[in-house]
Length: 177
Ligand SMILES: Cc1cc2nc3c(=O)[nH]c(=O)nc-3n(C[C@H](O)[C@H](O)[C@H](O)COP(=O)(O)O)c2cc1C
Image (tube, rainbow, N blue to C red; front, side, top):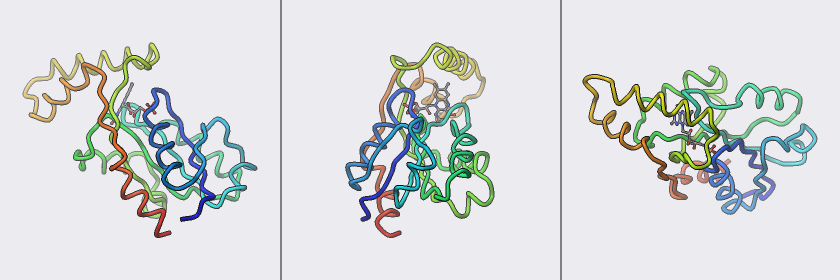
């Protein structure tokens, strides 16, 4: 596997950074905060990956990332996104990709979802407030599905369902391309 891999990440409560650090460990690459990314830096690496988080159905910071890559001759090699939903929520994850990526990105940009969790201790005030409202609305919803009941219980507290094992498909992709 090429060692010249840059893993840029946007992370507020640490899950995406944790996965970025694991990818760096597994590939011999360099993990770095997205804020440090410049067109010059990008072009000094063979491959550049980006990790971000789900935020109310959106992949956070994607427009900014697109602008950065437009200024550089480097193409994004792969995208990984962390979120509180378990990997088994395939339909919702599929919808999320469709709502966030362009048609071209859907077909040409390898993308991977990585379940993570929630960390209220590290959340800022606004995010805590959004989660409180969301949690309240879900609790009050009538005729909840068993999944929704489980999710409502889960998001009432911090939890961590991240694991190195979920990096399998992404690492396989990197080793084959
Ligand atoms: C306000 C808010 C909205 C969120 N929206 C979603 C969401 O739509 N889907 C999801 O799977 N996770 C959602 N999450 C969970 C985060 O995506 C998850 O905790 C992520 O791994 C955080 O990444 P970070 O620790 O790198 O900042 C949300 C979290 C917050 C605080």
